[in-house]
Picture 1: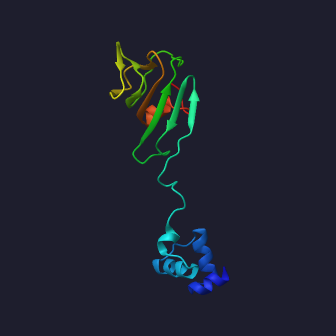
Picture 2 (picture 1 turned 120 degrees about the vertical axis):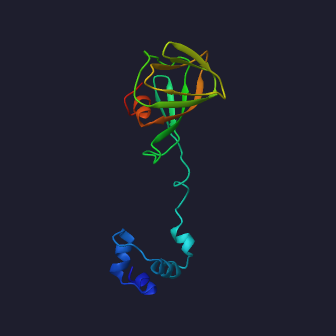
Picture 3 (picture 1 turned 180 degrees about the vertical axis):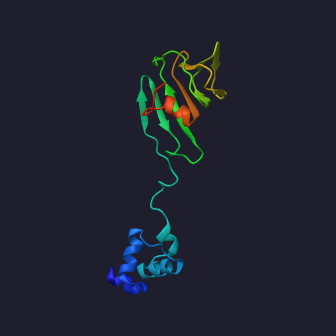
Length: 166
């Protein structure tokens, strides 16, 4: 640390505070550190890997439904995007009601949506949006179904594992 500090014309304590995040770094300090390390400023501040950009969803299953979260937790937009797969034998309960809105599009298979007193078959490429204050229930229709869904915070709590289950 002392050698690097000397090459950057910084005190070891200043370099230590920068390293631990206890002191904000000035641009001229960043340039000096990059030069002392024999690297470019771009390489010094570039995040390692692609974790800041790429989301690698892990499947979570419950009762014949599998979910892959496709957005980061606490998304700044207040929504959760997920891929959902319902097996043909997905455990189904009574229609539920909760605050919020739900949107989904069917990727493969056909889904049977009970929405209030209506039963609607939704096919691949079609999308639906509805108030979740209307009693609703999703079921696979004659085989498994995959869909892409967007929940608001209330929908996430009602539908996704780790929250109050639907």
